[in-house]
Image (cartoon, rainbow, N blue to C red; front, side, top):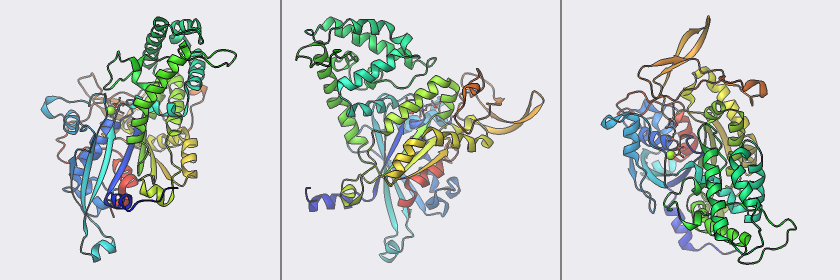
Length: 465
Ligand SMILES: Nc1nc2c(ncn2[C@@H]2O[C@H](COP(=O)(O)OP(=O)(O)OP(=O)(O)O)[C@@H](O)[C@H]2O)c(=O)[nH]1
Ligand SMILES: [Mg+2]
């Protein structure tokens, strides 16, 4: 093993006031809204110490102020635009748009440290940098590709595509790839047709009314900076020769395999290496309620997608070398987002259901010495709890302004099960969560939320002492 150089140690010491927080989650789970509310509430907490009661540094009045800076080497997260969307600045009121490329920011927090060593040295005012990146949630599903060669990925993906609920969307594509001879000389027209049909089938599965999540490779749906007609995106799984014999160079199979390898090398490797190889803390946001509403198939697909993603991170690094590389993950928080879709008396069940959804992954992470916890949060609280009568029963309702309506509505969104819903639980219309708009707030006193302070304390609280 190489000996650590003095330069590496110095660089690491210089970075010790920076924490990298990985905000992880599938598409539309609430990453951009979380990041915006996280930053804005930290910026407001210096003025209003009672804003974040569970964030200890704020509650004890030691958070002085916080400022946003660009993250070196990464385009700036559109903080002001996202905030304006949420608090209604400039007349636009609603939600930030879906993220279509990578961006990030650094929030620098000035605070008074109570640690004896800092007080004795007369350096009790400290700064902690918190680095956050944001990206289209779909892209995370590329990470599992790093561990699979083209033949393995093809076999797994073809099996998935041959079973419902995917089979009906992949039928036309299936017929085309079945007719491709893996060992024959590459036929550019047939390969292009396979890639086009494959991307179309992925798009149909991702449509909101179908609600599937596990789509690979991700840039076929969200190309980011790639042009949609980039040759790198002409990808499709292909059946390997039945007898397992090697495929010659220049054959259909070898050509597609080379493209797959180029995609991994140029797209997936840098995404993983630059943003997910090393982090100090991670929050895994899960839209449990959205998946419940979408039904059993979508719920199961989401679970599979989360498991696949979490297996791509390396939580096993310990000791000095891991510290030196900044690869010492301390904490992984799981958070069920949009908890304001249901009344507060449902939050304990929402949290328990989340714990079941991520149980195996959380176990694996804890086994590697990393702490885990689960929470139900709402980065932006859009509803309030009210009590009302529904069909003669007195129930806890939520009241808010549903998206697309012009007056407030109070509704009973359904009871959240504490365990995986059984077959009898997936009755049509059992869960009636509505998308709500943020309530009109000036934003001056932070953004109303549920449990965001607890999430902050879990992620960075121990670095703000
Ligand atoms: N009621 C409520 N809705 C939320 C909350 N957070 C997110 N949402 C809803 O979820 C949608 C998606 O949130 P985003 O933060 O944009 O999701 P994302 O994970 O960044 O999605 P991608 O950019 O597509 O990966 C928003 O447009 C809101 O409709 C919340 O705290 N409360
Ligand atoms: Mg986003």
